[in-house]
Length: 140
Image (cartoon, rainbow, N blue to C red; front, top):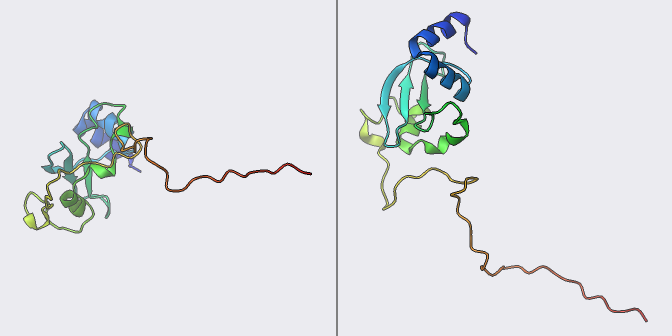
């Protein structure tokens, strides 16, 4: 929850468009210094004047439109930035290269569960367990 002076300062610092976008997506307005950007367009901010636990946050690259709240989720944050956001690392990955995500021949992808791009098996897959159908004998 924001105080009134903090909210007014955020409105004038961020501008009306970014102010209302943050209010819609995060439910709060925050102003901080840009620490870095990842390969997906996510921007990472820090403000040490905030209360503990609220000093670091991410502005998702998919938050460009006002109505895009459902498109942004936590699985879009790469591992190295996740460590910085959750205070496992003091320095961001742009400065400290100790937490560089290994590449095992695959690119980082977000969790697509629940989206139209989610993996679905073919319906031609044979079931491993078959449903039991009772056979009823006629009564004598």
